[in-house]
Image (cartoon, rainbow, N blue to C red; front, side, top):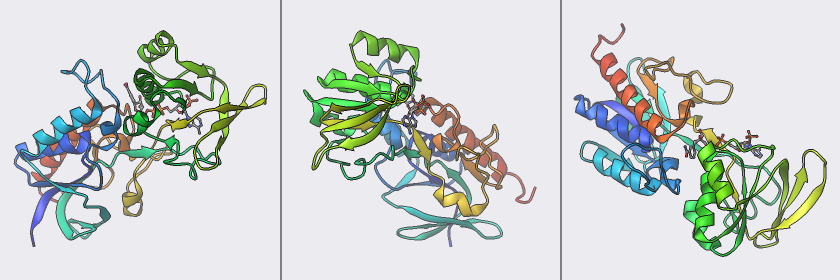
Length: 306
Ligand code: NAP
């Protein structure tokens, strides 16, 4: 039976960078990626804070990272990891296709979009409700949409849709956006509407989105506004399902706890990227991937039980 050095779970910026560093340091690694490669970074309409590129779409940046990683590593696409267990020495990674054994794991599964939980959200998903402006924005050119959320994602999606020619309104639950100042300035410059202090009571529509019912959290007033689409952008949930039974430490917000070298409490098990929280940027995911690969390299060079 072949036992490789590292299973890298997740093909986003963290996993791809980890693979480049791992293999260049002489380790044997494989990436498992269950779906559309590139993770959530792939969905970023554009990126202006990744050094080396004044402006690049998430998809283009991930294409470049993936092409570079593939010079080194095998990426097992669409191979869903179903479980990770550990015997007295190695990790057993069971996928939808096979079972593999590894000396260590870099867990870089990222996060998924948080659901709003409003009535109508599930029923109208794909019928005007979306979590990704890059994927679905084109259908709303010249139409009217609401973006729910006040963070960087909500801001970039709002700006992206406005540039497409969409009539955009941001709906935020507080009286101030969380997004960085440069995004806030652009929102003002582009004349994007913002409705503050409001939460979505219901997404309205029979077969397609027709609007949203809002509640003003300060006055209690209820109002119905007409929209053709609702983009929900209220943060992420780290994907930790696979490690919950392994005894990996997870903090109160659901992120995997790591030290500065991306080591978890389980020997030879590392994480990188959004699943371990922190600043959650593409650049930091890459950095964490590189650090995790280096830690794996250092640890594999030691006698196992030290
Ligand atoms: P985020 O920064 O966590 O913001 C989530 C937003 O959704 C917050 O404004 C929050 O409101 C709101 N929210 C959360 N739960 C809600 C609910 N149940 N109902 C209504 N509103 C709710 O998440 P994000 O914007 O998705 O970004 C994720 C990470 O990626 C962040 O670290 C972000 O900085 C990063 N990112 C960076 C860039 C960039 O250009 N640098 C672009 C995209 C993403 P409150 O403000 O009231 O908490």
